[in-house]
Image (cartoon, rainbow, N blue to C red; front, top):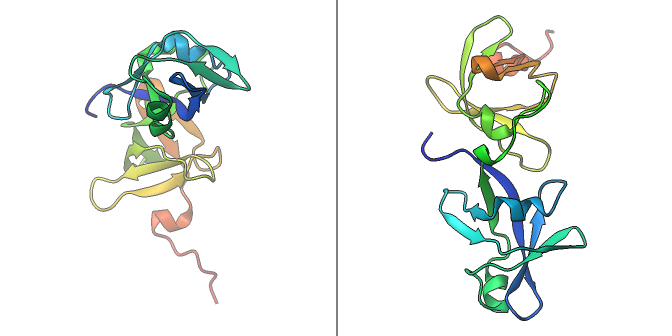
Length: 177
């Protein structure tokens, strides 16, 4: 993977007032955490916003940044996703907790130990997280990131064990006649 591992932490919701303040929607429990990250990044790792303090207003963060000099500039950024480097976060307390970005690049095997490929991405199209698996050859495919399909994640070993649906394994799923 090229560049730093990033964690999506918020999104620009639009302008607040007429003096160039901006509303940020945080994707965590604490809106003020965005201020502690200070320099937020674009998805490609380039600088996006440098936050100058802030205050919480209706579950959003109201802040200013030198990159935003007017209400129009703040509105133009509406929808911009904001990221922080993975290194800015503490390690999860529980072995069953992890950041989705930590899964990218892990090897994927089925419950019998057969190699299926590597995790290419962990998208969410609205119905839950998916693992995009890139096999050694051929097109990538998706598996639901649920306990039933992914019974074990071994971050320390760089391994994800999956119990894929039969259609993924190439077995027939239609009932026999």
